[in-house]
Length: 123
Image (tube, rainbow, N blue to C red):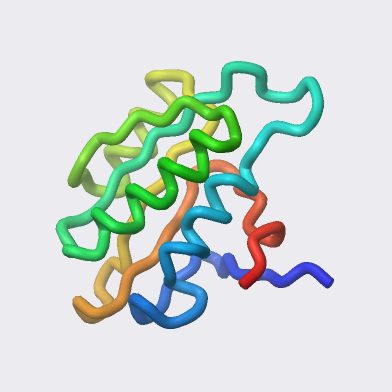
């Protein structure tokens, strides 16, 4: 059975507790792999806020995307609207933001401007 992790604005939670683990982020990136013949040369833009855990999730997502054959561009800290704008302006297949918005510093989250295969990522 597939699990649904993404709510209306991504997935969030306490860092180090399911689902917000590096393993989950790796699987999220890998789960976005193109199906046969779809998205050849897919590119993804990844931004984040300034939470310390963002660096860990950024690395895990990038590793998952790389394993899936997806070229990843890391922007460093940028606000969500900037990632949304750059996703369209650069013509990449998806934009991902690592942020828990207004939640406490010990939380983090992942949201995407285009659908990701989140239900493929299992813990």
